[in-house]
Every structure is written in structure tokens, then in C-alpha cells.
Image 1 (cartoon, rainbow, N blue to C red):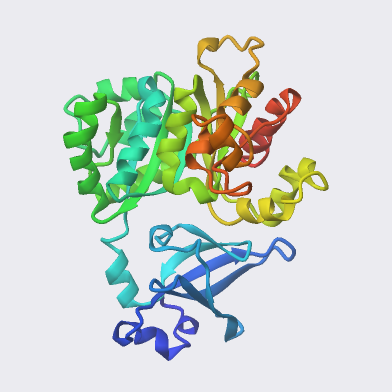
Image 2 (image 1 turned 60 degrees about the vertical axis):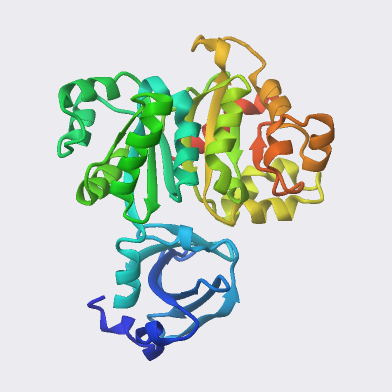
Length: 376
């Protein structure tokens, strides 16, 4: 905010006095063609989910006031990536004091780590957080060394036996979840004490202070995502289903699958077209499918059959997951497979809650694309 070029639109400073509330952010977009990072001032109106953008460098309007339904208050926080017409915009600064005052506590971040022995409960933990008003900013399944785990909890007073907790966190892949909400650190600690521990046991570690949360989240999410990349299938919780992320993850696991990898992603149009290319010319909804996958953040899950036990043997996981997800059209799914994931959480043939690998030979290819190529 020390850059004088940011303060070029006087009405941004008077947002608090406007009858129609507006919040101001500075966002960045990496132009894939030029390789240049562009900075914009983005005004957001919560009453109608409207977005206005101004090109800071060239001092001119970039986007007139436009309703963008996928940009909501839950998606706006420091470091978040929001999608506006397929552009992935990263929030890097608050644009004015009013917005900073409104969001600094109201959109505070915290870090929750589902312990290795409880990764099958990750969906239940996330669902409890979402029901309590938290927004899920990021998810990643990663493995921590003993030193990594010790560093993670070093400044936390949430455990009376730090070395024991570090050893537990280092026993296998865990699931890190960045959560955003009102006074998030203290609120989530209360949720752990009053709901999660009584219902699920000692299944999570969480940040103990706001200062810890940001630093620990950066360290955790810098780790490579875990994945088996063999005899597994891919399930994507689509952007339109992210409000039910915990329930969808839980439904997949309850259908007989073990999560062996997970990570949050946002795709630009080029990557989305590349990933969905097999459907081009095959399904009439191809363009809409690309629009859906680029409309916001989503979570990709690598799953194996629960009875596999990590052996990696041939087990028909792709076919089994496809059956558990149900027909692509949720209306048909509700008739033919009413207990399937799409029957429970889908809206239409495009916003049908999940993408899953269709062909057995594509299981390894799809998981490799997300967990190796895009993570590189």
C-alpha cells in the first residue's frame, strides 16, 4: 500500500460511506503469454457479488461492474486465488483501511492437520468446520519428517507433549487444511475441544496463534503432495461442490475407498482444456465443463480401494469409483443409483459434484497429471 499508484481511484477510499458496501483488494495475475505479472485494484460488492477491476499500471478501468457469482465473501482473504472470466487472480494486499479492518479478524486463517492415523476422517473434520462457518482455503495431503513435524508444532502450546505429537505426525501422510473464518484460530480450537475430540477422538493438530498459523501453513503447503500413482483413480470435487467438500470426501471414503493423495488446485483454461480433451467432440457439454473446472478452486483426490491395504495389486479401482460416483446426469443418478455421490450432491450434468476417471488405463495418467505434472 506504499505504492502511490494504488491510490488512484478516490471512491475506493470512501467505500465505508457508500450505501452499497464495497471492499477493495489488490490482486495479481500472471499473463501466461508475456510472463508478466499484472496488478489490479479489485472492488467487490457483497450485496450482488459484483466485481470491478482497474489496471494500476495503465491507470484505466479493466472490468466494469459485473456480477461474478463464484466470487463470494468466503473466497476473499489474503493469499486467496479467485477466478474472474478464467483469470486466476491472487489477492496480495488489502486496497484500503476499511477492507483491512473488516477482514483482518473476520477473515483470519488457521491451520488444521488431520493426523496420519485419522486421514479417513478428513471429510468429517472438514464438514464440521464448514458447518461451523469456516471456509476451506486449501487442502493438501503430505508426509512430514520428524524434523518437519517438530518445526510445525514448535511454537504451539496446544500439546503438553510436543515430541510425542511430532512423532505421531511423522508416522505417515497427514491432511493439512487451511481454514478461514471469524477469529479462526480461537474458534477452531473451540470446535476441536467441544465437537471433534468428543466425536472423533484426538484426530487433529491445530495452530495455537494467528502468527503461528500463517507460518505453519506456508511450511506445510510447501511440501509435495502425497500420492501412490499406481492402481489408483482420480476424483475431483468440482468448484460448484466445494461448499460440500467435507461431505463429498466423506461419501467417497464411505463408498469403500482410501484417500492416498489430495490437493487443492485452480486451473487456467489451457490446462483445463488439456485435461478434458478426451471429451472434446464427444459430449455437447465440453465447453461448459471447461468453464466449470476453471470457475474456482477444487480438490483433487487420489483414491485406492480400502481393502487394497497398500499392496497396489489390480483391484478395479477405476470402475468401482465410477460406479460409486454414479451416472454423469444427477437426475438419472437419483433414479438409478440414489446413494451415489452425484445423486446426493449434483445439480446438473456439468455441476455434478465430481469428476472421476472413466477408463482403467487413465487412472494413473490422471493422477500423474495433477500430482506430478501440475505439482512440479
